[in-house]
Length: 460
Ligand SMILES: Cc1cc2nc3c(=O)[nH]c(=O)nc-3n(C[C@H](O)[C@H](O)[C@H](O)COP(=O)(O)OP(=O)(O)OC[C@H]3O[C@@H](n4cnc5c(N)ncnc54)[C@H](O)[C@@H]3O)c2cc1C
Image 1: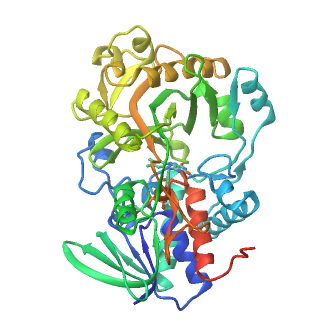
Image 2 (image 1 turned 180 degrees about the vertical axis):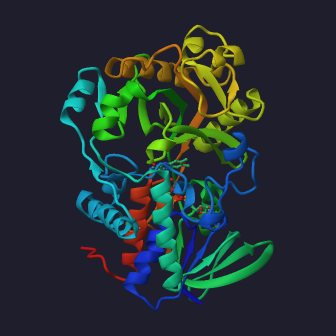
Image 3 (image 1 turned 90 degrees about the horizontal axis):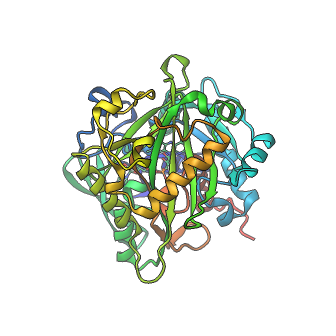
């Protein structure tokens, strides 16, 4: 019998285990992770630049979770990356976000300085109908982030936390003293029992969380979904922003539909990457901190949010079907199109791509996004690019590249008791809860829940 079992070895699960061990060094804690050890995570696309649809995606699964090969941008604030501020109140949310920052500092060999928000850039955006979000950012970069997480996981191992790998938790049953978990570990079925359970399965565990909620009769609130593209251009176009605040995150309200779009996940000198979500390939991006690994490009996402009203409650399936169709039209790959071709209503072909001044950092299928992307989303994206061009001239160049699709799913948001407990002794944290959308807030939720379990939070 374990005191705490944690399903998912991403930052949420890791921070929860760390804090639980700090709170109770003798506690018997286990992490169940369907992917591999951090060091064994390898994406074949790194070699041949093409996703080969691994059964377990090394980009999203394994120790350190979806953030393992990320850009390691930690948002030290509550303005984006989730709604922890609304859930816990700003002060408490900030305490836990700072808690994540301090832990990472302790496990990092060379911790970078913060990028602070910038008033002049905020004004420049405001004067052009754009809202630059206020946030301090700590950029570890892919390599430092990886090394820091490795140190943290080593500490957990030394502290006696059991770390299962290639172990897929596929069912949870209520027992007299807690929960029994059914696990397929390297092909073998086994059951473990625990008093407290923390589910930290991230976005890749969305179906699992849904099944568990249905089984335990936990109410699920619908969430929105974001459909968009990854945009790539010359790094110099955004240098004024990236040199001052590192990561511009900008909101826009489109003219035609008055929809909200956002520019986010900016990677200076970065690479566009592919992500496999249950066999559906979508675009993403990252960058390395080391100067010699930088490219001459930058990339970021432009996303158009869709909220469904009425009875339709399947935003994830909706967006996933669009990405599936995009893969279909791109012969199983991500599609790339030049902005100039998109607005002229013609497809991009290999010939035009070869002549492009922006060299693509991901091998994608040259095509026409408009044959798949919904009209409303595409109109919103085009308008946003023109709006961004006013503060970063060159953004709307013909040679700007758009990769489709990049979707963000947040559909499942189970009801909790105010402390992220969705059933007695069962907690749901991180991106899988629909509450967080980034590393800092997912980690902060892990710390909070470990404190709640050990009665360390003043609940009044
Ligand atoms: C390419 C990329 C770049 C990103 N860059 C950034 C960034 O720079 N900054 C930022 O703040 N955020 C970034 N993000 C988002 C960030 O990675 C996530 O917000 C964060 O990882 C969420 O942490 P989590 O612990 O909640 O979930 P995850 O990191 O997704 O971890 C969940 C873990 O649970 C495991 N799991 C799922 N289901 C089961 C099951 N049934 N049984 C056992 N194990 C299971 C998964 O294998 C996974 O390892 C990026 C994401 C990607 C994909």
